[in-house]
Image 1: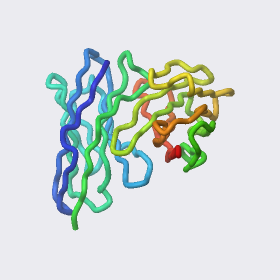
Image 2: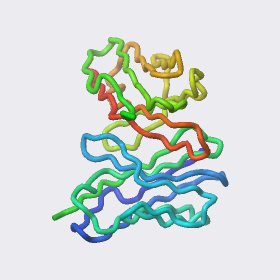
Image 3: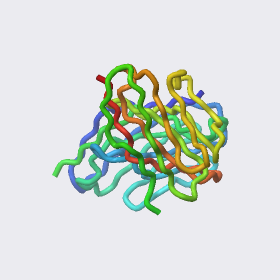
Image 4: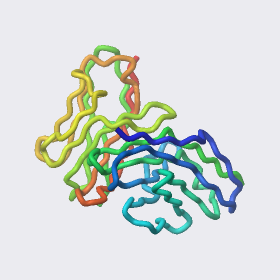
Length: 115
Length: 114
């Protein structure tokens, strides 16, 4: 079974600054996918970024990028030029491999962006 | 494409009552998932369907829980004899089965059992 750990329950950042959210996972699989989802207060879960484990290149989506270290089983999310609308709970999730068809989520990190 | 929709958005019920939630996936998606999320935690997988077939069920899905997807389109999740511990947000997600299988979530149904 896979496990996903987010060791930072809460983070805060000033508007326009950069912040990095940490995620580690444990798996014996070789082919899998990793995701970061954002859940704003009282709103639905939104996909932020996705990384395929077989790709060495780190995924980027506008101000969001990941640092994927497969050997270390680490998958951090960097948010550049933070905006007030980035305030949300962020979840790291593992999918694929023999658990194909379901996601295993971390506990989440509450990110607050201050003006 | 209107996204994944869930109804009702909120449900308050008394302990021992039965409740049913509905999920309508994105129209071309053939996979549908149910998760449960308690306050301040990440979602936990309950079950998923590929078309009409229920392919996997979590141990969290006790015999009081049942899910169906009769025509491979919308799905229902029923909880019988609700307990206070069932109070949670119930999330539905859908995906189009590809190698990445990215899941898109609905707004959830918040269940409160009194």
